[in-house]
Image 1: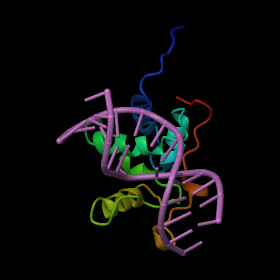
Image 2: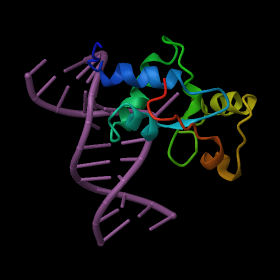
Image 3: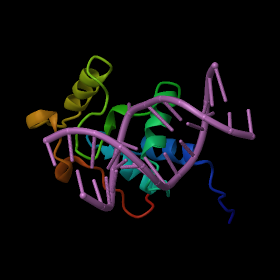
Length: 111
DNA sequence: CTCGTGACTCCCG
DNA sequence: TCGGGAGCCACGA
């Protein structure tokens, strides 16, 4: 079978983000790890920043490792929080999401 | 080509 | 609790 030359990290990251199921969230570091680069969390953020709208990515399902939204206030923060609430994600004190309960857990490579 | 920057994360004091 | 430094990769000047 053909082998997959791994596309660019950027491409893999975007493909992974598209797989995040509704009602679940993933962290930047988690996505980076799934893409093969556990230290490339910043690239995940960059991918979202540059292609979230262009590639219709479920960008609102990506949060930081604290289970909180990274976007600055009045810069998408409230919108993201609202979109997640609509999917059933609940927020606790400090607008922190319980990752133990809402974090996406793909099986192996999943698809 | 070199630099600076960024929706991050980990490590050390 | 807070701050500095390193790692990672793509893009625009």
